[in-house]
Length: 294
Image 1 (tube, rainbow, N blue to C red):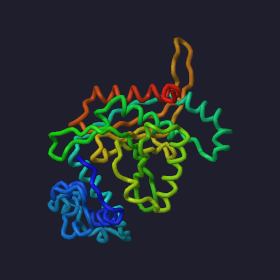
Image 2: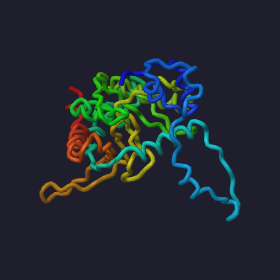
Image 3: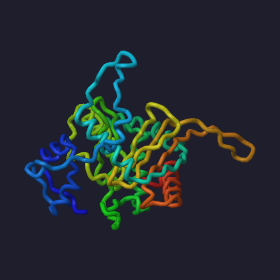
Image 4: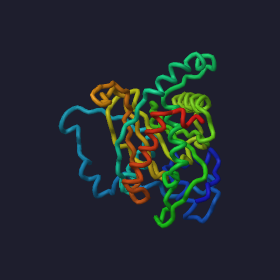
């Protein structure tokens, strides 16, 4: 599908109204959408059919004291999109893990340079670089399925979405052309995008068009989870907290810091063997990061 031309104001209005600009453009047979096109346009599907919502439409106050907290418009739109994705995409999650020894050694060795540059070199920067290179090696993961499910749209660019947990909801700013950028540039962009997302200074044009998204819970905890694919992407990579695992080399045990990897994918496009190969390739890059720095 051709990228839809729409101003930041139009995209913000569409987000507030819960309108899918791409779907609207396709319905109108247009490649340009303006604010006037949003008038009367139908919002994205509700999180569940009305008949189903009756099951939990109960008077909770009848069972004890309650309070009410209005969900923000941003959170309402995100909830509708996530619910629609969960209903429409036959998703499977493949789990693996990767050795973080070399990355942690590099981060320690490069700490003086990071301080001199004024950049915090996080493990996430390495993950973005590894994912960008993996998408180049496995083009089917860098694709979108047409709305009718009949055409696979292969992308020649590599843009990585970074899920950011903010007080006003989950935001996914995008690092453009991540496969062409070095670690220092990626690290600086992650810090900038995350800070501006927290301050609600990310524009709509900075949150669309990702090839694939990384959602990182490593700073919070957990050993595994099943992230929801963010359409029109066909896969999403989840990360949780690095843990020390005992690896046996013959009869000798060795403690190894391993990061759990959770790859959810659209089974209409990707099969299990492809997912296993993709994540194995990704894990090799993480275990030997110098391979992706050449």
